[in-house]
Image 1 (tube, rainbow, N blue to C red):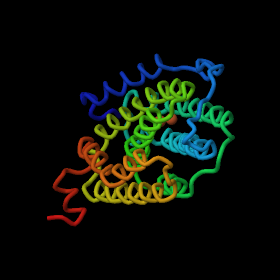
Image 2: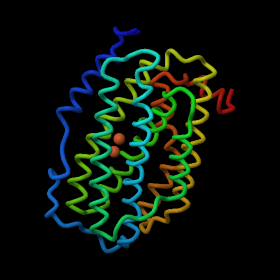
Image 3: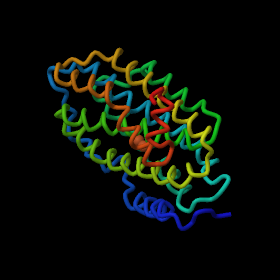
Image 4: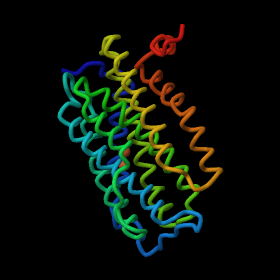
Length: 261
Ligand SMILES: [Fe+2]
Ligand SMILES: [Fe+2]
């Protein structure tokens, strides 16, 4: 059964799948002869720990994609959705491989941060409708990954990282677009209580993660540190707007759920 085939989000998903196929690249497309450069103010171990988190994020997103693949077309098939998830699996596998190789050159892979691990475990433990997990990974966590890549890319004058960043960011922007189009097509089918439950769950997930990460990563640069604190204080507003846009809750419903009027 195909429902809502006239929705513009459906053709957006098919267009995204086609774009994803056209944008596939490989590990060898990165020029690995370009050296990794870590600035003097940034301890190499700190830099390796930071970039290792991208690797662990990719692995968690891969686990999410594999779970979603089984559910993405239930109860109704949405043309293009399954192909988008399959392409995301190929993308995240490549990203993980590239980050692992990058950190190998600056001190080796470091363990996952416990706050991030808790966030991924919480997101992956969701056993309700798959829309919540897609919102957690493809809206909230990938939105954060893009922000972090953009911030770090600006601060890290490393030509090797910048080349990686340009390719990975383009894929991540497509994953965000997939999450938005898929959720717009699907959230209209969920009842209010379910949507409210997902909104509260996402807000808790983000709040725990943002402040937890900030507390654990003392940024060795005052301006960058200030920018990160501002992010933790105001970052939820961006996700909130994205969640209104995909139809998870309205602004009034969010205010009610957050204890406002
Ligand atoms: Fe990725
Ligand atoms: Fe992604």
